[in-house]
Image (tube, rainbow, N blue to C red; front, side):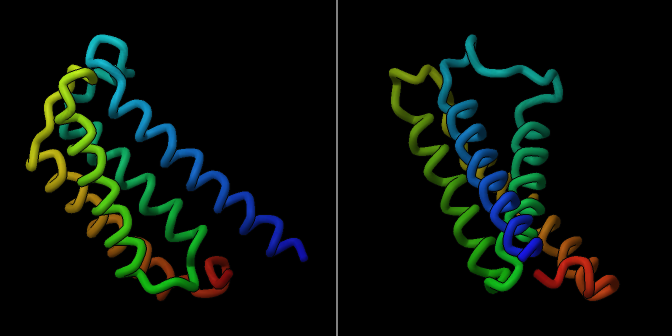
Length: 122
């Protein structure tokens, strides 16, 4: 019973963070949150967090499904940023940073799950 409750929290957290990432990514440049880490670093941090939270939320789903979905999400962000009204710059390099972060985070998650299988079994 408690396992289902915590899983629902993780699922909601994942989708909330995903929505936040999308809104932050499409805000006009001057209004977007600036973490002063640099554009690529912001992309890497965002997708590391999304991947790790997504993996805990959807642990029973195949890892490739999460990776594909988040990579597609990165493409959607870049395509949206290409729309002039958002005053953002689309870049294939941003998507590559996103996808690289996804692969690294999934690697960390899978290794952690193998090392500590019980806590992440839900």
